[in-house]
Each structure stands twice: as structure tokens, then as C-alpha cells.
Length: 240
Length: 339
Image (cartoon, rainbow over all chains, first blue to last red; front, side, top):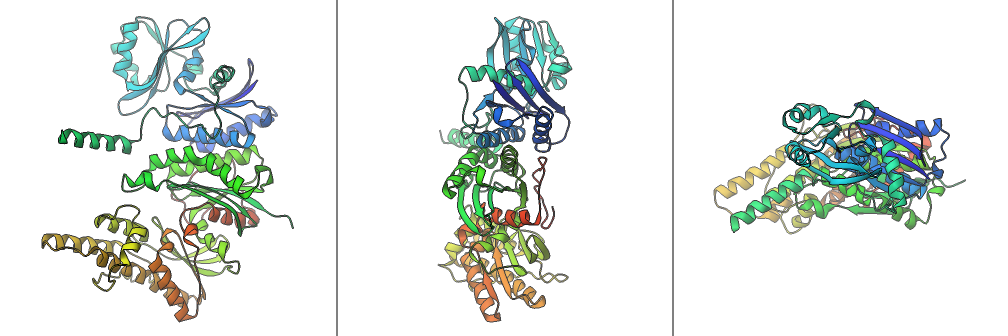
């Protein structure tokens, strides 16, 4: 089985081809250029390098959120366009789960954190049991304080990763009461190889969708919708 | 000669659209998914909501356009897509989608300027129209008076110094409680009003007689409403809408006629969302007839944002050899005539 993996959910742009248990190619860039300028040229580069016939892939796995709204849409629109043109299914990989899969089979809890602004992080809590990734707490948008409270309650060693680490480094040091560590550079950010490898598992479980169906899972409504809901709630309060 | 088929995608604002165009002038399909109802709740287009809707709809709209045209991706010669100007997040959906399809099908990619698309809408129903001609482009974001020297080549004679014409319509519509989108609502209400009832200023710009300014007339309308409110007088909304509309249309027509005379142009076209305004169409037609100019305007369905016009513009760019790479980005403030 051959899976194309795409991740443009954060500052990293990453593209990979995984065939069964072989990573054929991966191209990961952590640079400020917009994903619109990098993602497809990166795919083109590895496709040329490995003489890839795009028609030979079985499915397209994409980091489907949470993340930067625009970044997610660039990844999703790319996956949807490829899926439409190649008539291949898509696999929506929850971004935080994809991040956690980088740390295969490590002991203890895995806690990816992505800076979500507005004093929140996109996060989740995961562990490996019997060599399988288990979701302890599904991905969510919460304050860093809330995550740390949860982790302290579980009482197990935690490995942190993600672009939220440098932002909350000091806060973690201050608040954590259980042992913790930070994942090293080669596995601490989004990697399309992890998205594609996890995609293979999802594919075998039948968790695919059509290119037409696929939409990102933002975990958050837009600012305009949120503010409108707040206004409506305030109006309802005033009337009651 | 073999036909040239182009699939075009447009997502620069609040319509998700796709179209298949044959040989640059024949529209085989024209699918538009409008989000207007969604944005009405907010009194205008909300960029993040627009972008989210685009990604939900884009594949469906494309598949429908291919089906309506009775073609497959294998029949196509190129993919055209709007890459600016517009809302960056909205543009990016169409751009990323178009690039991925073109890449997977090994098709040439042609990025299109949204306004060049609006101008090109005139070619759809007027087989005889060819450059050079004078074109007034009026929409919610743009007011330009240009000479279309050749396909995709423009000489800008005049532009707005402040608000776009459509923007002024939206703001005035909001002020008199008509809601969004303002253009069609003012046009409709005006039919019941007297356009001579209130005299609003027509701005002239000394150093460039073809430039426009609409913030003055907009402010005059707002002042008129405020003063009436302070005096406790009822505003006749239909008279106000008709008088405001007349002030805007007068200036648009007058500047266009002046440019036509100065540059000896005998073919006049209009384009953009405001080009579907009934009063503007009638006034321009009348002025053209008086001066012996030939007048061209797209049907309202091709005035609003659509992908057919993008397909037409893409065709002429494609024939000139314009090709974009896989690194094509959205350019929210793309200038007319820039690549």
C-alpha cells in the first residue's frame, strides 16, 4: 500500500511517500515561506527524485486539523485537488495524533502542544499500549494550565513536543509535578512520514473519505461566529 | 483545428465557482455556489467564513462544472484560476486546488487576474468584441476606467481615490437599513423613488478628470440622514436611494464619455458586480447611443463573480503562453496588468 502524506498545519511544511513499512521519501521544511509556495513544489521534487507515478498511490493522508486555519486549508485543498484528479480517497489524520505518532512506543504519556494563540494550545494526551497509539484525551483547544492539571493528575512521566514547547517551556517547568521531557529536533514537529504511516493504519480500518467530503477539523469556530454567539448570549441574558 | 478546453476556478470572495470554457468564448458550464445568505448575518463578507465555505464546496462545484460540460479532466488543455486580487484565505483555496489538479493531470496552470476576468466577461456574449475598447470596471472592491489595448493588456485611465462604487452602495444601503448586499437593494428601491428629489455632490478631481471619488457622496448621504433624524423628520428612503444612485451613475457615465472622446474610443464596455445595476446599464446605453458608440455589457449572471469569465481570460493568457509554476501564490492586492 502506498500513501502520500501531507502536513501544512503549522509552520512546518512536510510531504512524504510511505509504502507499507518503507519511507520512500520525505521532504520537511521549517521555514517562513508560505505553504502555498512550498507544498506542491516539494511534492514535485520528491516525485521526480523517486520517479513516482502519482497514479500508483492508494490514498492521500492529510493533517486535517487543528492548526493554522489557512495552513490547514492549503493542505486540504491540495489533497482534495489530488484526490479529485487521481480519483483516490483521502485520509484525515487529526494533527495532534499525527504529532504523537512521531514518538512510537515510548513509555509514559505523550503530549503534543501547538500554540493556538488566545492563551490556548491545541493538544491531546496519548500513550502507546501493545505497540498501538491510544487516545487518552482527544485533541482539544484548551489553556496550557488545564493540560498541565490533567497531566499532573495522571501522575505519569510525560514527553512534550510541538511548536508550543518553546512558547510554554518556562510555564511547564514551573507547574509540572510529574517527570517530563521534551522530544528532540528530528521528531518534535509535524512530519508527513508520521501522517502517512498513521494513514496506512486508518486506511486498513476503513477510515477514509472522498475528496469531495473532506473538510478540515478546525476545533474552533471563526472569530466572527464566536463574537456573534457571545452577542446573542448577552442579549438572551438581558432578556431573561 | 482542435478545440481548446479550459477548466477555470474562482474563489476570490464569497462565491465558489467553476466553469469549462471552449476556445475562449463558448461557455460549456458555469457553476456558482453563492455564500451571500451566510454573510448576511454579519452585514458583509467575513473572510474566515468565506474561506471555510470554499473548501467545503470547491470539489462539488468543479465536479458539477465538468459534468454540466460533459467533459472529463482528460479532455482539458489547461486549468485557469483566480490568484488575485481578493481575500487571501479565500483565494488560497482555489489556487491550491487548481495547482493540485493541474499537477496531477500534468496540465498547464494559468493564473488569472480577477479584474481581467470581469473585463473578459464581455467576450462571452459579444463574439464581435475585440480589443481595443474602453471599459468601466465597477464592483465592491474596484472602480477602474481602462483602455483594453489587447487581450490582457490595460492602460488605466482612472481609478477611485477612496471607496469603490460598490462599497459606497453597500455603506449607504446599511445606513438606510437595507442590509447586505447593498447594490441590488438600492437599485430595486430606487425604482420607487424620485432621483431628482435630493441633490448630492458629484466629485471632480482636478488633476485627473477620469478618477473617481465616492466617499463625498457617501458622507453627504449619511449627513442627510443624521440631519433628518435630529429634526425628527422622516427620510423618504426610496427618494434617497434613487438620488444617491443617480449621483454615482452620473459620474461613472460622465467620466467614461469624457475618456471615450479624449481617446477616440468607439466601443464602450462595462464590467464587475455593479455593472448589473439597471440604472447604470440604462444610462450608459443612452449616453453611448447619443454619441454613436457601440455599447457592450455582460448579462447580470456574468457580472457577478463567476468562473466563466476567468476561463475566458485564462484562454487568452494561455494562447499568449502565460504559464504559472507549482509555487503560484495568492496575491490579495494584485495590480491590474501585473503578473
